[in-house]
Length: 132
Image (cartoon, rainbow, N blue to C red; front, side):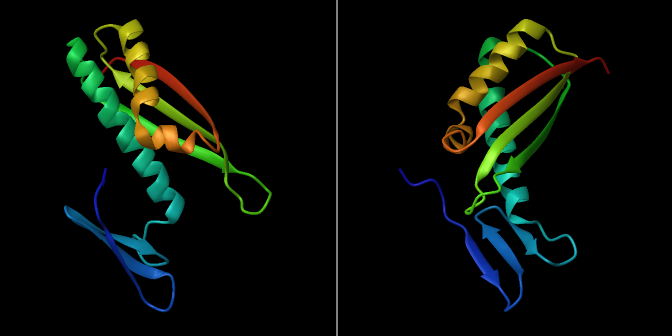
């Protein structure tokens, strides 16, 4: 199953662009350039959220906002693959906190990028709640 197609272009330094069917991102060592692990963490966070959101909608849960922070640590060995990754999620004005926690846990199980990274790294999820 094909997922999609992107194009990368670089100058002789680490300055470039990533072009997808829906937009362009500046890469590397330039103003507003995104680094490789920023892209990986962004892909993980957005895949997780899209998966989570589908589950939440099926359960008819409501909330006003979600914030996700993804961080990690690499191994010292070469190649320095990821050792640990932490997803912190804050859900605002959740209609049912217990169901949101279950939905987030399911989101990690069904997110293909989370599943891929979990083959090399210990994955953790922390869900907290706030009122607006």
